[in-house]
Image (cartoon, rainbow, N blue to C red; front, side, top):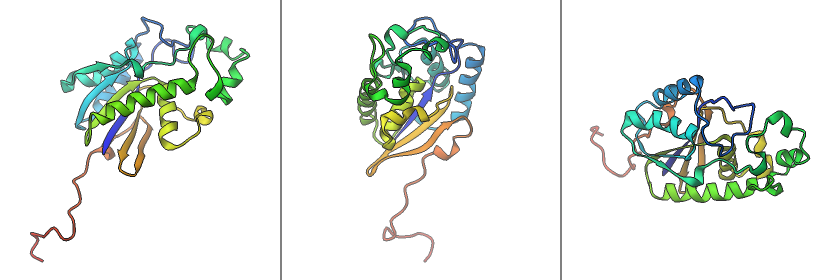
Length: 218
């Protein structure tokens, strides 16, 4: 089993106002830095084996808050990067709500292309390929991936069997943790959009087979 922790970056000044996309120089604000520090504390001593991040500043800063105190080497992965929104990048959301393509983004994302950008179906495909490659490198380990809300929603939809055209029903909050274990029988979601205790994610000892012998005197 590989356990993957999907972490959204902390709050920045563009959240809920403008579509940052791959815009350079979008950093965590004071609230976001506090969220990242709290995230690191919430993760406690979970045995995270590796830390990966989207290459954008807000994800790197969030990931560093977790990786640095644990002496984890942070690796930046292009495939975990934000949706390429094309001409929509940097636009105010209140203006995009009026765009002719907005209903398609909300209700037919599998077939709606951002102007000169990606479709959300393409984002899902490249993200899942990236994640499957990373988890294959870490059998029986916990890895943490720091990325963006839309990308995390898209991969969660894929792994739980939700049609991509319904992914807008999912919510991923800043510095939340969504945990999916990849087991022999398929993926299992153990935590979703979690901003509280993660103690229940701690690996448990393997059960002892009934015929393996006993030392309790029976």
